[in-house]
Image 1: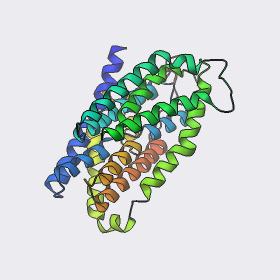
Image 2: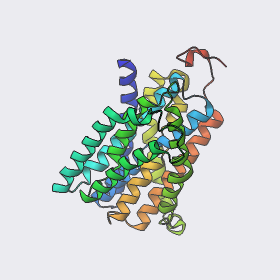
Image 3: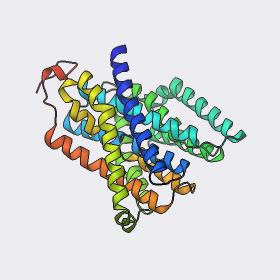
Image 4: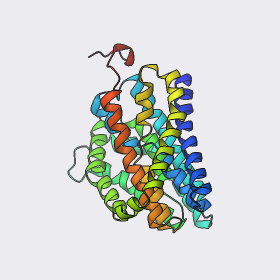
Length: 310
């Protein structure tokens, strides 16, 4: 178990670190972006899309395999580093910031200790007003409210909350029904609305006008992801090293969040925002297509922990 964690941690950390440094240095030294704008670029292009990776693994039946679990774990590590970096670098400490940190820690502990009594309460199961879903959204809105007060970002506590929630939603548990409802709400409503808002600020004309920068930055992200992931994946995930590398080269949610934060705070302009989000969207599509088309791992019995076979 410790070896598996170390392997996933190593892959996930390099998957974040090398693209972050590469994108930041290139935009700062060669594109003459401000240091803060370069950091936004580093955050946006260092991410791995948890949404894309999770969707692909579930739809292909790889989510319960050794390779699927390794990829998911490494993706969590990558996005954790991105969320942590975004929260620390751009935070503006005030008394409200301390309040935000305190409230976030308090809510996470309370949820960890007592949420199971709400999620598995038979009196609340299958109710038309969905009390379990409302409870989870109440916690999320609390993060958002206090993050606004403290001039921070709710993404880190929300990410940690999702991480500790995973123990409540194993397939064998009754709470899997709540998980499926949350997945429906997220993929059918919340995620599309988020990307509609983010997409409204993109200008395709600006991307075309900056096509050289777009292509070079896209190449920087892909090359740094390849260097950061492939060689460790080849050592630890021999049956799917290229597949792992391609999936971990995807970006979407956290990359868009980082870029949108930079635009809203005035750190980056519309040109920079359009280029970054354009790269993020392209990285969600192109590596996924290549991975699914040519590098799909075989469903062999040695990939499965529980001996499942095709």
